[in-house]
Amino acid sequence: MGLVVQKFGGTSLATLEGRERVADIVCRTVAQGYDVVVVVSAIGRYPDAYSTDGLLKLVEGYAEWQDLREKDLLMSCGEVISAVVMAHLLRSKGCKAAALTGGQAGVTTTRDHCDAHITRVDTDRIRRHLMRQEIVVVAGFQGVTEDGEVTTLGRGGSDTTAAALGVALKADRIEVYTDVNGIMTADPRLVKSATTVSCLSYREVCEMAEMGARVIHPRAVEIAMEGGLPIVIRSTFSDDEGTQVGAVPGTPGVVEIGSDRVVTSIAHIANLAQVRVVAEGDKPLPARELFRSLANVGVSVDLINLSPHDASFTIRSAEAEKASAALRDLGLNFVVEDGFAKVSAVGAGMRGVPGVMAAIVEALTDAGIRIYQTADSHTSISCLVRMEDMEAAAVALHDRFRLSK
Image (cartoon, rainbow, N blue to C red; front, side):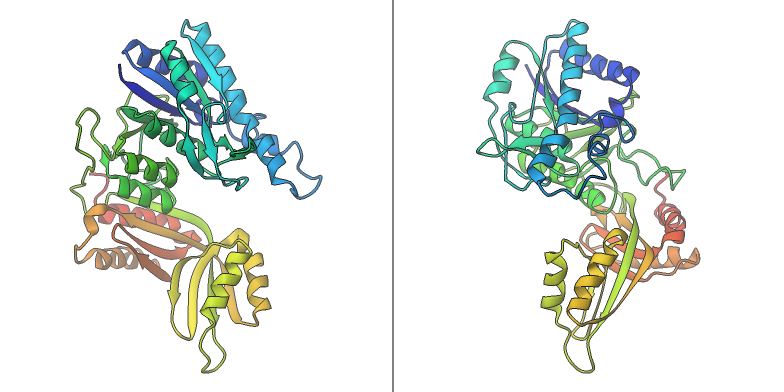
C-alpha cells in the first residue's frame, strides 16, 4: 500500500463547504488504497477568528512581544484547532482518524522561536496510527525543541511540515491543495491570460517562490528535492490535475522535469524601497560594516549592486525606517526611495541561452517602463520597476515570452 501526504491551506478550510470538500478528497484517496497523512494550516485568513493573525489580534495593543516562546504557543493553536476539526469531520464520514500536534507527530526543531527549522522527524507515532488504518491529521507550521518547547516554522511552515513528513515517511508524493489550480505562468490578478503550468522542475519552483510566487514555500521544495519526492500542487475546489513538480509520480529514477520553454513564469514582489549609498570623497565604501549593520537590525537586502565607492540594493518598504536608522549610525551618505516592485522572469531553460536579457529589456522599454536595477541567476532575471508599472511589466514579459500559448 502506498502513502500520500496531503497538505491543505487555510483558504481550503475557511468554510464548512471547504472542509467538507477536503474530507471528501482525503476519504477518496483512502478508498484508492493509500495510507494518508494530512497536514493542515490554521483556518482561514484574518479576520477569521482562528487564523494565525486572528489569534495574534487577541493580544494586539497591550505591548510589543517580549516572550517569543509564548508567541509561539499562541500561534500554534490555529493549526491544532484545524487538526481536531478535520479529524472529527473525517470520523463523521466513516473514516478512522487521529489528530496530532507537530510535536506529537515527531517534528523536532531548533530553538529559533517564530522561525524554527526542522532538525529531525521521528515517524514512530504516525506509523502506529497508520498501522491501525487511521488517517493522521497533523497540525502544520509547528514542532517542539529537544526539551519540549513549542516552536513555529515561520511563513510557509505548513508546506515545510508536509515536505519533511513526506520525506521521512518515504511517501509516494506530496499533494499541496490551495485555492488555485496549480502554479500559473503569472499571478492571474495581474495577468489575465495566465495559464496553469503542468510540469516544473524543483529549481524552477524554488526560484518562483523566492521571487514572489506564493503557492508553496521554497524551503518545502528544497526538502522534497533532497528526498527526490514528487509534489503535486492543485486546487481543493477543482478536479484539474494541477502542477507536477520535480519527479514523475510512478516513475522511479526520473527526478527533474525539464521545461521546453526558456521562461516558464513571471513572478513579482511589491512594496520595495531602493537604497543608494555613496562613500565620502575617494574613500572606499565600508561595505562590510554596512551590510553587517543591516543584518544586525534584521533587514534583508536584495538586488545588490556593489562597487568600491557605492552600493544600491532593495529592502522591504516596511523596513525603510529601521534601515535608515542603521545607516545614519554609520555616518553614511544614503538615499532611501520607496515605491518600487521587483518583476522576474523565471525558467530553467534560460541557462546559457543568449538574448534573454535583451528580450526582457526590449519588452519593458517598448511598454514605456523604466528599469532601475537588475539581477540574475541561472534560472531567473529580475528587474526593479516602479510600483505603478508592476502590472504592465508583468503583462509585457508574459506576452513577450508567449506564456499564454
